[in-house]
Image (cartoon, rainbow, N blue to C red; front, side, top):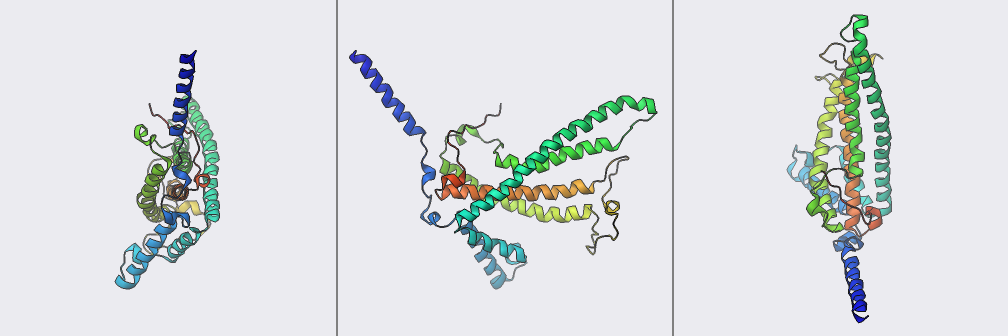
Length: 289
């Protein structure tokens, strides 16, 4: 009887140790003292503002940091201002992620459209001999791959939000919430977001040219028949390439917005605001097998 009692006590102690080990309280307090008042993104934006002012006044450089557009200055000032208003910043994050949810619904519809278009392709493939034609509806093939491209472009924001991107789970899963937040915040802020920002600048002109803007003077053709100015496919019986090239730019803009939302969330984790950071207890990491 004594042995049974001691075994129960040992098991209860071990169970208590396990619960204590699994409890992650790293996101319940600010990672740094300054984060108790200011969102980390605001500190980064303030540093960028100082560097931009120095680059613009002291060096008069043509580089981006000293030659920003007016809206870029406004954006940095807005981030600094919002960094001391966590409730407002969280609402901005929610609004951005609402875009990702909308994109998911659009992607769901596009998935069915791809299925229908490909079904038509298969059916017409066997009807071609009846009409003595090699391709009955040539635009369908082009429409199928353009729809599939839209799925990839518009689905990126929700993929980032749902964290479906594969990670190195065998060591990532053992990290604390704060350590994960540090890694994501640094990588998204200093590497991912600048890359996406550069891509949107490059792709803006790429999309405009595909839709008919002239390279030399930057003017647009006049007239209401806008589809006549779109970049054409070099293959016969194919849809114009202008719209899908323009959506490459749109997709990267939504992608960058969702990365900004991720920066806001990970910043909240570093501030000790677990709820705003949307840390779900008991989440299991995904295995790619």
